[in-house]
Structures are given as C-alpha cells and as structure tokens.
Length: 462
Image (cartoon, rainbow, N blue to C red):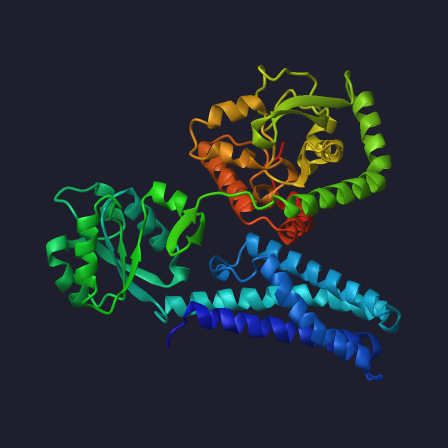
C-alpha cells in the first residue's frame, strides 16, 4: 500500500466537493425538514463546487506542504470558503435569485461547510500519521554530502515523519565531516562506493547536496545514479535556492530564471491604482467615525498629537511620509528610531491595543489615496531598519520595486510586528518578493480577506 501525495490530494479534493455540494441539502433539511427542495437550491449546490475550486486556487488551499494540518491551512481554508460565499452571493445577485433562497438555510450552510472541511482535513492528517507510523508509503532515502544544506535537509526529514521519508544515512564527499552528521544518521560510505550503497540499502530516493560549482563531480554522481531506478533530487546551495525562488521564462529557445520582476506595470498598474482608490475610499467612508473616535481617544489618553508621521522608503526607494495614529508617549525622529519590543515602556495603554489590532495603520488610507502606498504590498519599514538590513540580506531592496502596502503577503503569513532576528526579516523579504513576482488582483483580494484572520491569530505585534 502506498500513500502517495497525489492520492491524498485527490482524496481531499473529492471530499471537499462532497462537503461543499452535499452540505446545502443538509442545511435545508435542518431548517425545513422534509419540505420541497427547489431547483434553485440544486443549482446553488452544484455551482458552489467549481466556485470553491477557483477560490481554492486563489487561496493556495491545495499546496503540497498542507499535508500537515496547521494554522496556515486553517487560514487558507477559511479564506477559500469566504471567497466562495462571495461568489455565490454575486451569482445570486446577477440572476436576481437571492430572494428565492432561505437566508437561514444559507446561514446554516455557511457555518457547517467550514466545520466539515476542517474535520475532514483533521481526519486525513490523523490517518496519514497512523499509516506513516505503520510504515505505509514510507520511502528510504540517502543524502550525498555532509555540508550545511545536507544537514538542514536531514533535520527536516527526521523531524517531519509525516512526509513519509526515512533517512538511511549519508554518503560523504570528503574524508572529514561535521560531527553533527551523527545526530541524524550514520555515514554509510564514500562516493566511490555509491553504486553498492544505493543497491545494497534498498534506497528509493537520493538527495544530492553538492555545490553547483562542482560540475564534474555532480555529473559523475548523476551518471552512477542514472544506472539505478532511484528518484534523484538536487539540493541547491543557499544562493542557488534564493535564485530558484524566481520564475522560469523562455527567451526564444533559451531558458532563464526571472529572480524578480514587477507584474503591476502598464495596464496592470492602472488596475491596481483603481483597486487602491476604490478600496481606500470605501474604507474611509465606512471607518471615518471610528477613526475620529480613535483620534480623540489618543489625544485624551496621553499628551501629544493624535497622528504621527515618519519617513520611510516607497517605490523605487524614494522617501515618503507615512501616517499613523500615535501609539507611544514619545515622538522619535527617524535617526532615533528603535523598534518596539514586548512590554515596551514607550507604548501607551491605548497604543498597545492599537498596535496589536493594527488600527494604528488606518491613517495610511490617506497615503493610498495620495498614491504613496497601496492597500496591498510590502510593508514600509522605518529608514533605520532598512539601512540595518539592506547590507545583511540578499535582495532586501528588491521589495521597493513596488509601492509599500498597508497589508501584505508576509503579514498574512504571520510575519508582522517586531523583527528581532535576521531570520524573521529574511522570511518577510521572501514573502515580499514572492508577492511581487506573482502579483494579480486576485492575490490582492486574497490577502485583503485573509488579513482580519491573521490579525486575530497573530501574537507578534506589540
């Protein structure tokens, strides 16, 4: 029995279709009992399935790393279902049929679907864990190499048994190696015995962690492995891995990797600008009274102005003045900036609440109307923070190819608030570059819808 990832994915997609399509009759029965089921309900139940799949694509619901049940999958699923409901409402409005459907039935439907979807995923996750523990679908692997990339891979394999890979050991390229190798597995031999090691250990997968500069050695390894039936994966060095985050393009017959490119140009720039203007204007219309109340509360709760402006970098690295509600008892200049930390004495009581909920960012809607910022984009860092990290993190300033945003892809993935380690900042930059490379209006809408969920779940802002 093999529990392959494509079989698990197919099972989950089929289960999702059954839940999305079959829950409406259940909701109808809960409210109406055995009364007549109309054609409009049938059409709605059928239409919900393709709408869910389209929304799932925008929400990255069926990502391979979502085999593990966790917070990101829950956020993605809730976003997908919210987008599906929005599509059903728009469809009903377009065909003038919303009055023919029971609001209570639809309300029950809206609640039970995400519950059942989450339950089916939790069941799948427990089932996979149980099967992996019994050895079903587990494949044996070797790692060629003992460098830092090889050790990082070994750590991921040994600490993630749910992925179904068992590390048999290492094949070394040199006589000496880091003692840390022993904590992940034994060294089975050296490269000259590779053929015997692969065949003698019944290996299914070989991971090759060889520097890309060692082309001759890499070719020799691939020639040996080419005479076997093992699956072969190349583990790139850190620099190559950064490059490979880009997109493959073909120029004539020549392939190239686009490390980063701005997709919101030309007509797309007009679409994004219209999107920004419409959403910012609507948000200001709806939030004008709460914003006035927040401004008054800031003035009354501590000495100082309600609004605070700070110099930050905008598109193309040009300076812009970003507006916020004041959350501190001090008004620091750009040169004096020190990032807020947990229990920071400078943050006022009201300011702590505003920062945790990101309500202090609401005045940036005016920055959006002015054209300095977008609703969605990489968050604008204080100038001092930019200068600290631009020389430490490869590609840091690439995030300034586009306008900064009030919310962004990094923020909905939990990277908001204090960046007290370089690792946190590197993850944030990776998401920023991913956003720039994959921009679409649908991605913007996905981020906007996911933002409230990320604010509720995040504990990093203070």
